[in-house]
Amino acid sequence: MQKNTPSLPIAITQGDSAGIGPEIIAMAFRDHAPQMQGCFVAGDVATLRRAAQVVQRPGQPALPLAVITQPQQAWEVPTRCLPVLQLPDMPGPAPWGQISAQAGAAAAASVQWAARAALAGQVAALVTAPLHKEALHAAGVDFPGHTELLQAEAARHAGVPVPQMPVRMMLANDELRTVLVSIHVSLRQALEAVTYDNVLQTLHITDRALHAVLGRRPRIAVAGLNPHAGEGGLFGREEIDTIAPAIVAARQAGVDAHGPYAPDTVFMRARNAPGHPGEFDVVLAMYHDQGLIPVKYLGVEQGVNVTLGLPLVRTSPDHGTAFDIAGRGVASASSLVQATVMARRMAAGA
Image 1 (cartoon, helix red, strand yellow):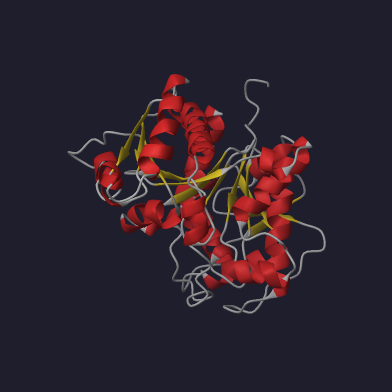
Image 2 (spheres, helix red, strand yellow; image 1 turned 90 degrees about the vertical axis):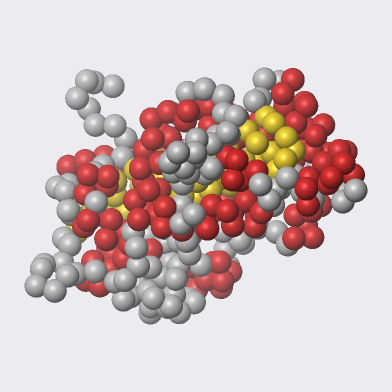
């Protein structure tokens, strides 16, 4: 690469057009121009134009849009201007706050295009605005969410079956990171997913991903499954029979893993707050809510969802489509901006 050549841009998917995704994107470009430089939206121009009008401040002009045809053109767009790469055959904006098959199809198409661009080396990372799982289902998209859709795209690109492209969800903010053994399954299925192989695989995925970000091996705390981490087998043997052996195997491979610890205190130990440096870089949680409740309690506005294990960088805001406030211009762009900042940092360290 030549000395003054801009780095690859970051693609932002438009999300569900009936939700807050497009308007928080417009807010981010309006209010956080330095962080959004070199980013563009892969989606529909009309959808983003409507969003720019929704967040227009009284007495001020609406945020201007710039239609681009190639990702690298994002660097040529002035600040406080929203670059949009119009995707082919994209439906226009759906009515605010309503589950729509057309919105689900458009959201999925945006994610698929951005994933393929990242896998082809055309963009440095993708940041995904919120989509709606019911809208995806209505559109006939056979994936429960972003993570599974991206996993399938990456597996197709690599020419391997989906199980050979294992991924994990990490939720992070400035104070705490958590990685999940299982994601969008029932609680009963989540308990069944706490196996030696799944825990060990999650430890290795976490170690590789955060090593690239931190420049060193992360210190990983592993939460137990049962109250008090089983209390020596009194409240369940998963810690003894499954989780602890996986930690031993990971440590033998060089992973800096510790535990299992009582899940009601391990997140406090890992929290990195003013005057309280965290003991760990990340907590490995056994199921979705165990790991996500602590991070979300610290502030949804700052949380970032990251998919680990993919051959690309993907981050997302830590919230959904918020149909109840969509189209009112009152949503916060903070989590989207944080997701963009983290995507840029991860892409630089990859």
